[in-house]
Image 1 (tube, rainbow, N blue to C red):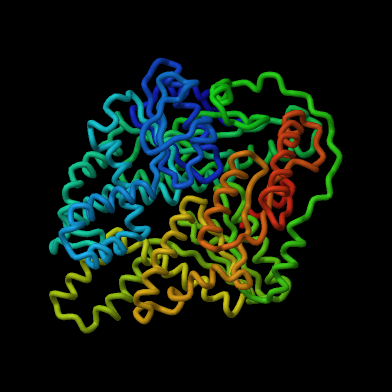
Image 2: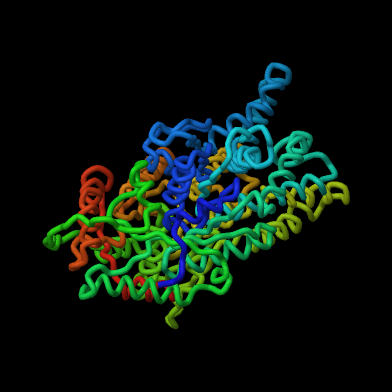
Length: 583
C-alpha cells in the first residue's frame, strides 16, 4: 500500500485556512468535519464552513445550520455554518434595491429586481460571502482555524478562480457598468477580493487539501484540480487518500478484487500528485454521521468489526430493464443526476452505449465542468456521438457569436461597451446555459444522454433555467428557440426523463431526496432512481464488506417505499467499474 501518514499528522501541521476539495463522493465533507473536530478537541477555536450549494454539514454534524456560525454542542470550540446561495443572493439584492425603493418608480425597481434574479447574482453573492472569510479581517477574527468544505471540483475551481477574475474585470472596466449593477458597488469589494486572493496564495495561511479515493477517476480529477489551482498561485497542497481498503478475508474474491483495484489505481497515480504530502484514511464499515463517528475517523485502526451473518440474495429490479423501458420512447432526453461520486457518469455511459447498440441515434454529453465522458470509446456504427459543455471553449464561442450578431451594426463606442460587458465572469454562466439549452433541443431528433454535474452545480443550472424562462416570457422574440423552449421541454415527462442516482448510504440517499424535492418545485418529475454500487446481494465473506452490505438494507428500503416510483439496484462489479473508468 502507498506510503501515507495518519490523519492526525494533517491536523498537527494545519495552516489557518484549509480548503477541502476533490471529485464528488470522495469524502470531502466527512474529512473536513473530522479535521475540524480534531482541531477543536485540541483546544483550538474552529469555524467550519460549507460553500457547497448542496451542503451536507447538517446531516454529518447532527445540527441544523444557517448562514451564521453556530456552536456544535458535542464539540466545544467548534462552530459551523453554510453559505446559503439563496439567502446570500436575497441579501445582495436588498443591498442594491433597498436604497432606491420608494425613490424610483415601482416599475423601475421591479425591473432592477428581475435583472438581479438570475443565477449570476446567486454566484456573485455566494462569492462575496466566501471572500469575506478570507479577505475581511473582522469576519473570522475570533477563530484560529477556518475550514472550508467545498463543492465538487468543477464548481470549486470556478469559485477559487473568481477572486482573480473579478479583480481583473473591475480593474479593466472603463465604462462603469456590469450585468450586476453599478460598477461602484463591485469596486467597493475590490480590497476584499485582493486580500482573499493574497490569502489563497500565501502558503503560511492556506492549504488546499485534495481528497481522492484509490480509483482512477478521482485521482485524475484531483490531479487536474491540483494543476489548475497551482496555476492560480495556490501551491501549498496536500492529498488525502480516503476509504483505503485491505481485505480482511484474504480468500474472499470480491474483497481481493476491490483491494487489487485500489492498489492498481494508486500505482498509476498521476505524477502531479505523487510529490504531494499524503495522508490516509481507512474504509469504514458504517456511516460517518455524528461527532463520535467523526472522532473515529482520526483513529488509524478499524477497531472491532461487528460480525454479520451471510445474507440471502434478493431479486431487486435491475438497470437493464430500466434501459429497455427508456429505449421504447425512440427519442428524448435522459438526465442522470445525484451527489458526486455515486456513479452518474458510469450509468450515463452504459445507457448511451446500450441505446446505440439497440440501433438508436444517441448523443452523450455532460454539463459537469470536470467532463468525465470525453474519453468514451465511440463505436464504428456512427450511432453514438460524444461531446461536453466545456466552460472556457463554450464561452469563447459565445463571445464570438454575440459580437458577430448583436455587435455587427454597433458604432465603435457601443461595440467597445459590448466587448467590455462580455469580459465579465458572468458571461460564462450565460454561455454554459445557452449551450445546455441547445443540447436538450437535440432530443427532438434522437436520444440525448446528459450526465449532469454533482447536485449543487446542477441546482444552480436549474435556477438559471427558471430565471431565463422569466426573461423568455418578457421578451421571447430576442432569444433563440432552444432557450425559449428549454423549461417546457424539461417539464415534459414524455420528452425528458430524470434518473436520480444514489449510493445506498444515508447522505447520498437524503441528498437525492432533497434534489427530488427541488426538481418537483421546478415542476420536473423524476422518472426513476438507481441505487448504485450495492454490496447487498453480492456474495462476500469479508466481515467489513458484510457489515457495509447489512447497513445498506435500510436505505434500499427507504428509497423503495418513500422516494421512488421506479427504482433499480446495481451491484458493485469490479470488472465493469475498471472497464468504464478506462473509457
